[in-house]
Image: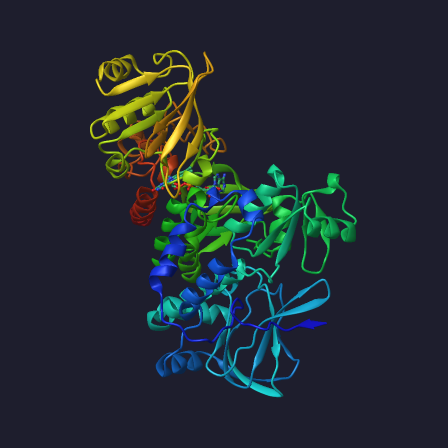
Length: 595
Ligand SMILES: Cc1cc2nc3c(=O)[nH]c(=O)nc-3n(C[C@H](O)[C@H](O)[C@H](O)COP(=O)(O)OP(=O)(O)OC[C@H]3O[C@@H](n4cnc5c(N)ncnc54)[C@H](O)[C@@H]3O)c2cc1C
């Protein structure tokens, strides 16, 4: 059975004209930046029809640009013509590396099959192109395309040629890449497009993780509350008891009970094998571990500068910065970087004198990844404050670094710093320069346990810093941004409200370095030491060059972003470090060549 959409407003093909609204699109981009903050509960509750309509209207001209004659001619020259008859399949959901299609005449039909029903997503005609970001990321396509007109003529550009063209022809690539990204965002919001379904209890942590994983990997999906009428009907139809939840339901109607992230990635077509079954080695110039802002920036620079680059990511590209990373991921990919998600680096080894001296063992991969150089960009896991409402204000009043930017936001008002270690002390001192007052919220009853005595003395004597011992933040409130918090004295149980635009969460971060060998030296908190700090280590004593600023105690292995000791824990800083690390890699590789 086929369900025709009455309106095209949500579909991936939509041709009602509206004026470009780049600002709206940028706002949407910004709003998904720290997207991990969107709670599972909020995702279960849908956005309003009105907000959806505005979104589709505002993004339409980006998703469906009118290609100029010149752009059409460029695309046509890259492909080959093909005739498609009515009902003939152009590509099927689940396929990889499908060609890019430009319609010359006739009409195609794009549709999703779900539980035996077809949902028509669009009917592209002459001058339209059919594509999906999976063509750029190498993941599986999520819809099927077939001929609708008696006979249509299309131009097909093979995936590899299409990616190369996007890297080489900016006049076409900008329009198409923006369109493909926007189409995916529209699809992710489309209530009628299902993709994968997660059936879960509203407050299920496991369910939340599946949702977050698919979301960060930009895979359209729906979360269905098991307690809702729809959830109960679905559970009954699929024969799912509450012990089976969360369950992932595939478009063909197959339920997976308590699926692992690898299973989810497999079903969603995200897993890209790095090596074929019979290969036991993968050779690369550069292996990048972690695809947060630092790793992605490094991947873009390295791949565009001709290094054969492999990126390993254990969860989803974007790291702590969440979904905003798509453009960097696409850029790196179209320059030829190989990504694999979820793929965790399990260990890093070293074979002296080999052409590819560094080797990595990867989760779920039998082959060993060998590289001439490695960039570690695995970031850190931040401890989060356990306060009601906190997620809503991440980046909008809850900060994990105190730089001049955040300090400015609380100038003249009361700021709160939570924590009792050196980073909390330093943040309190720094913010107190501009803020009227700083409340240092400490869970225990002393500062001296984790803070250096010199710093704690300065904090204690600073006039506009007040230390609140045995105190915890319970609630955070505000409309769009943080406006006030409720704190509790855990000794007396007394609670009070404090008006504040900023809470600095300085309760510690654990660097993701547990998988590294001891030879990669770290500071007392586990962050990787680089540059001058490792110049005296044994491996460098044998070298006739000094370590680069981002190079670790093992020559040829670099660290960038949050995982590096002394780095500024910010997105922009991580991006800069990723780029710098690649410059360091080039110098190191050149020095090998001269030997
Ligand atoms: C809640 C929150 C809010 C923030 N808000 C802001 C903000 O508003 N503005 C701002 O500038 N900064 C903000 N930051 C800081 C910013 O997110 C980080 O500084 C930045 O993400 C660091 O980038 P990175 O690439 O070094 O590390 P990460 O972003 O942490 O990325 C590291 C990546 O490595 C992967 N990884 C880890 N171990 C392995 C392994 N063994 N194998 C393979 N992959 C692995 C992880 O899955 C992750 O994707 C915030 C941080 C948090 C936690």
